[in-house]
Image (tube, rainbow, N blue to C red; front, side, top):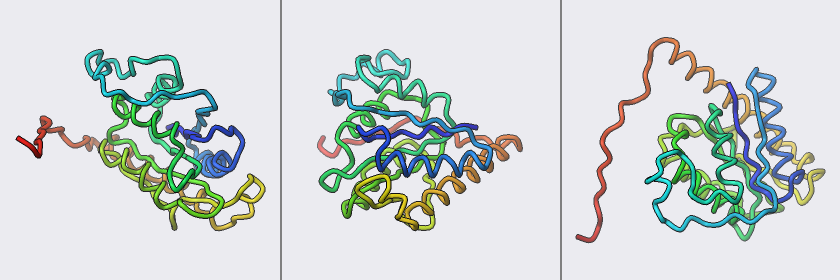
Amino acid sequence: MKVLLINGSPNENGCTYTALCEAAGALEREGIETEIFQMGKQPVRGCIGCGGCARKGDGRCVFGDDAVNRALEKAETADGYIIGSPVYFASANGSLIAMLDRMFYAGKCFSYKPAAAVVSARRAGTTASLDEIGKYFSIRNMPVVSSKYWTMVHGNTPEEVRQDLEGMQNMRVLGRNMAWLLKCLEAGKQAGIAIPEPETPVKTNFIR
């Protein structure tokens, strides 16, 4: 089993990465493989609602010149996800949100796989950012993995984040909880428990 951790910060070895590494270490100690995907500093275009991904039907965005399709390729081989972001103006990184918009619009690999959000901040805006990222999971039938407290760390540098002992503990508990749920899902699969049967989508517009 494998968990893909997405570092939604342009700083590859910064505060968000430090938090993700702590969660990844806990997962690996439980026998779960991990990979951290670095979104990096390159621009990520926003979704334009063209519907091209739906028409192609291959689980990829029609725009292949940034990180989105590379992330989707990694996501297809993962059994769970942890998405991390720094907090900018009480919100997740805009480039990450642009990437997630397109990933969750085009991707076909997310349903019924557990996921969690992680955020890092110097001081505030964390709960709003957690809520923002979590909405992607709740629109794709994904079990949301929690910790003993909200999955956030505080600090202005990686060194300060490591001093946030409670935040780092939250990351380790998150990793162990993710590993436990993955093993439970695998045990259910081995016992013949199938995922819920999907219904034909129904769309109701508010204005007729």
